[in-house]
Length: 257
Image (cartoon, rainbow, N blue to C red; front, side):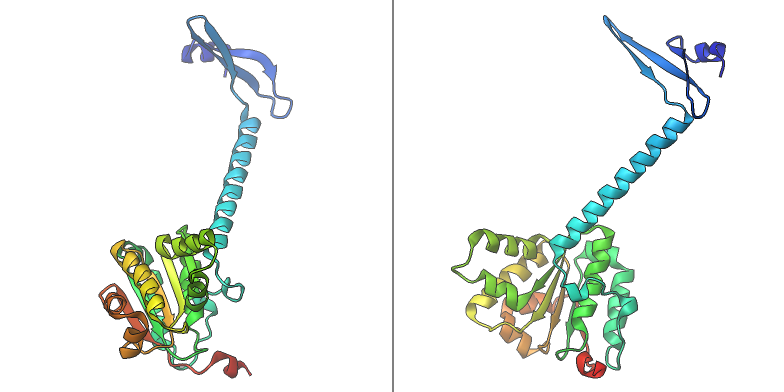
């Protein structure tokens, strides 16, 4: 661009006389004046602009990676399941319905999350329920949602009176406020009036706030689940918000032996 062409754009744009030693472009500048204030802004040449774009892209990538790490750290997915996905789920006889339900849930996850829809995966110990539940968590975490893993017997034990109040509040907040929550191993806790009350607080709050909950349990979705969770929680679990699916596969650990 010639000096005459630059002046046609704006009388405040001018050639500084500098030349980039890399690309050979002339360095133009813009003189901004407001009252007694005046400042000159140099326009970067092509190679400098490309360098700035690369640096911006690198910073954006690093920021995205940091945010992803923070989400996964917060979620607390067990180490054995941080790589759990549908495509590495070992489908044994008896897992067909659960696999199909989770696949459908994930294919329509934006609508399911918006609607507060959840899943209840029930079946015997070692049938692959936790893998499927964590596959849902890992997927929504990659999408950018705030999600959390909550091992029911362990977390309820930590919430018992007498513990550290600050830590207990963090544990409860994770269950109440996460956009998507996995309640793993519901029913493995020692059921009592106190545990039923805590579960009611969590399930009722999530139901009212339209936050999806994925549940894995060894309990049958009838009187066993009602007895463990209480009538109010059971009513929430049997609502239209949840799809109940059985997993009848043999113990995975025995199958690998």
